[in-house]
Image (cartoon, rainbow, N blue to C red; front, side, top):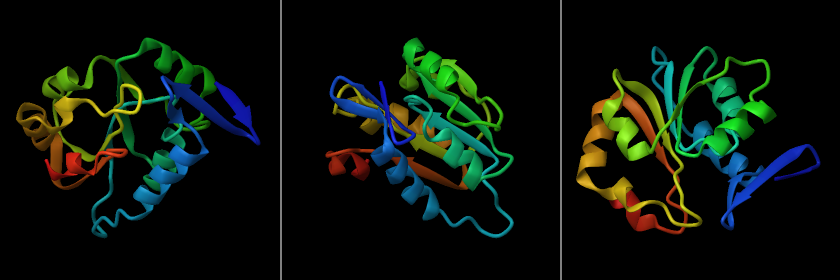
Length: 159
């Protein structure tokens, strides 16, 4: 964990969990979401929290949204809480569990689901497997948005 020019960088197993690059990547993706005028992303599900760098951007892009963040690593949740990069916004609901299991146990639907799951530089295999995709489909609201960080694995987007 390091800070440079006011930006935090968290690297785990050679993979950036939070950094100026990852924050810019997600901010660019969020800027491309154009909900219908009457639609607002009020419920957001983050699969993979990292150090919470995306929370402020999500709250800024979708004011008043409710965020549920699923993270398997308790250390990352503690870092996100300690850094509080979401300043002045509500603390998200944290769920410490493996995303593959958590998605199947969640209730309700989400207007926006972000998937940013990695073990080092590899996204997990389960994100392209039918049971996980079916669970995601059940959690995604009609006309909702799904954003996936597939980093170097574009074929994962085919699923």
